[in-house]
Picture 1: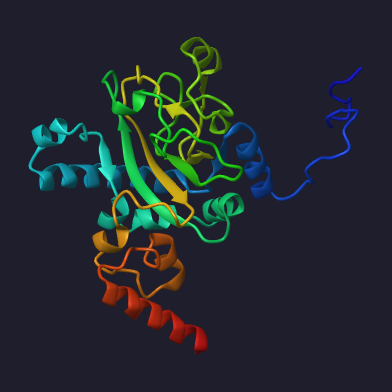
Picture 2 (picture 1 turned 30 degrees about the vertical axis):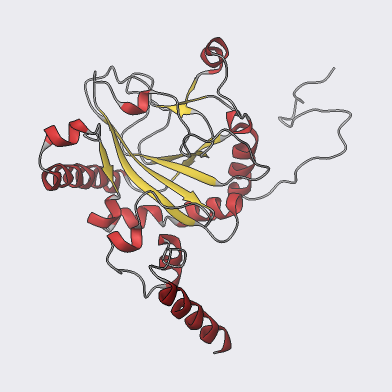
Length: 281
């Protein structure tokens, strides 16, 4: 009889090919390839997680003020999203550059990855949120690829529980072109619970949504989306950062400095000349 072996290993028969055992990063990548998502501990202390929560609240308040107040933010449905927090506070750049997170992204996407977007997401208690609707982090795309194009990493500032509006996924839907029928989606709807300080990592083509927060406190998170360098950033980080970090080759590549479109033909040629000279050096 097939099933689980008594020594805790997985019993099987008729199988001649199997993925090899590897590192913790390999295991997370294998799970994401198969079902689309995984939970990864960050190792960030509870004190540091709480501080990131305070920093996110300050960034959100600053963005509301700079746009002209909550009414104008509400008019575009953006009251609960802090966009590009790393531009306002470098603690969020450190979060996006978390070494184990980048290792996982490179395992899935290849060595050359770009931070396509970083957004703080606030799911308040007993309020509607745009993220309650199912979506992909590469929206409006109805195709599948043999290799992932982007990986999302949702950093949990607060615990993700069913009552706090944990992210809900449709497992393996990153391999489906169309959204499933409503009854099938309801049957497969799977809340992903996670402790504060964890990353919920998933193929960005996985259909997912925020759950309804019926608790008495907000559920905050910071979503990083890493992509292969053929996808445009949501906001041009090189422009938003006004050239900051351009002198650090590794960080500059992550932030998209190397793939930002030149502003003119002359600029394109100057960049090409600089790269040619660098190769010869």
